[in-house]
Amino acid sequence: MHALRTSRQDPIRAEQSPTKNGLLSVLPASRREALLAAADFVSLDADAVLMTAGQPIQFVHLLEAGTAALVGAEDSLRGVDLVLVGPENVVGIGLVLGQAVPQHGAVMRIAGHGHRIPRRRFEDALVDMPDLCDACLRHAALLLDHALQAAGCNAQHRLVPRLARWILEVCDRGGEDELTITHERLAKALGVRRAGVTMALHELEGRRYIRSTRCRLTVRDRAALTACACPCYTRMGARAAAELEFACG
Ligand SMILES: [Zn+2]
Image (tube, rainbow, N blue to C red):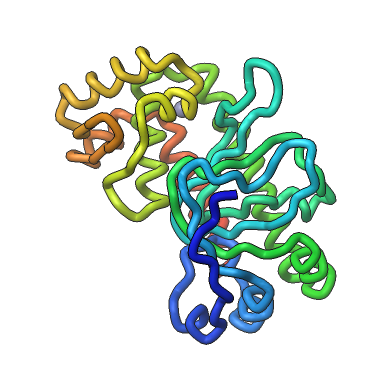
């Protein structure tokens, strides 16, 4: 576990600061406060392990920034990104479906920070707060939709549009047009060889959509990169926005 700078969440500060986490943002303030009273606020480095396949979940993570990946655990899928989870959802949401021992791992792909809640405290909160349970079920459905879309994307869409989609999604989750990642890690994220990622980055850079160095990507032309991205980018974004609208509407 690479969590750093852990500190007990200050409920007053949390109430004053608008959260960027999808689950927290749809909860009434009193519910949010009650849940965060059990949380630590943690910074999470890239590659920090949040869950390990086959081992009981210890903590649920509600990210405020950064991006985690649910990763395969066996054979050729070991360490390969299956679906991304950022502030729009919860790492460990399978608990609401009774899955205390996940079949996949979770690692931070892009460093960030968020709220870490011990599993037992989160399970108790699900029992005590039916509206939290309902919100978690809807977020579990949201994650399922994202995973299904990602499966179709990986099978059907070309690497350059997939890479454009990936860059935009991760930048959106971080709230910046810059991200730190090596070509090697990016290759693992996309499930392709490093040489392929390097060629795809060169293509996007040649069109002046991005700037790429050994471990840093910068979006130069967001509109053009969005037009280049596969349709999964707008579909996944619309799905997450609809979830938020449903809860707040
Ligand atoms: Zn796609």
